[in-house]
Each structure stands twice: as structure tokens, then as C-alpha cells.
Length: 165
Length: 64
Image (cartoon, rainbow over all chains, first blue to last red; front, side, top):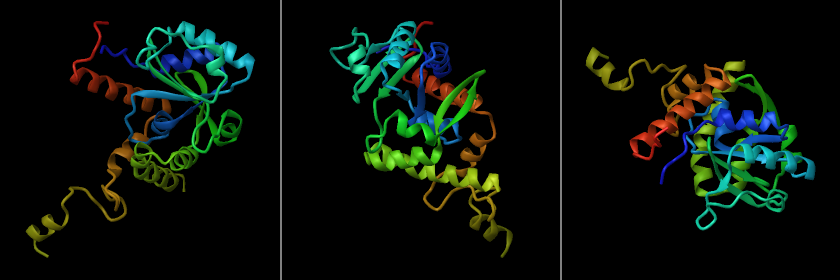
């Protein structure tokens, strides 16, 4: 399988250009805050209001997003699925993009927003889930992959706090 | 402690008590310190470079 060249910055800029409300979560959020984690997909939790989903659909069209799940490779993301809590596994011209409607213990955009911080990425301001909240949601998710990340996330948080003293 | 004993005790060159190279659970702290230095954009670019290197090693890279 050919892999699209990963350009997470391009995905974030495209979403911001279309005015989409979203929060970067998961491994990329952790990496943006200094964690030495390698992940092949960008996880974003988006606001599931009809207006935001409309903007998201336009951004995903610009990114040529399609499902990457077997049997659905040519399908475009739909409004009804983006308004649901389900996890949309997409691939775009700039890399793999996952849109979980909720993460951890069913936390959606509104609940995660106060736990996020604003970071500037290549001149674009994006909301990123704080490292403590990334750790919490990974603990809540409880999967083997999530648990495997925890030692690095915790040590990164400790090191960050040590530097801030 | 003679020089050889000292070398054996200090298995990681440069590892100091106040800034150890590894945490007790085996996490490489030198890489974390390195990743905390750049800006978020630079960290994201570093991640993308690593991903792309792995993709190329797997022979899954595209022509473009």
C-alpha cells in the first residue's frame, strides 16, 4: 500500500483556513508538547455542531479525504457520521487523519476545550489538548497501545514541570 | 574507586545524578529533553521526518 506523504501541518492549516473548531489530541498532541512518541495518524476531536460539521466537510474535501477502512476506501466522510460519536478513520493527501467524536471516558469537544491550550503551528493557531489531559484520556481509554505510551508521557510532563520551576 | 570501576558504574557517558539519561522505568530522558527544546512547529516537523523515514525504510513511499 502506498502511503501519502505525511504533512500534519498542511492538515492543520487547511482545517484552520476553513474555520473548523477542533482540538489536536493523542500522540501528535503529546509530540507537540515534547513527548518522544511516533504516531502515523493525526487525531482530532471536532465540535459536532451542524455549522462546524459543514465547515469540516469543506476542509475534508480540500484535503481529498477518504475512509481507509477496508471496503470503504473510496467513500467520502458524510455529515451524519461526522455528527456522531463514532471514530472516522480517514486518509488524506497529507496523511492519515482520525476523527474520534469522543475520547477517553466519552469526552467530546466541549468537555476537552477547557483542557486545551493554544499553540502556533507555522503561523496558524491551533488548540492542542494539554499533556496532563492527554495522559488522563489515555488512562481512561485503557487500551494496550494507550498504556504503552504512558511512561513516556509521564516522564515528559515531569521534565516539562522541572524546566518551568 | 579506580578509573575502571568508575567507568563500569557509569554505563552511560554524561549520565549525572541530577540529570540522568534514563528514568527508573527505562524512558530515555535525553530524547525528551531534546524534544522540549524546539518550538511546537519544529517538534511537529521532527515527527513528520521520523514518520517519513520509517515509511521510506518500509519501501512504501510514493513517487511524489
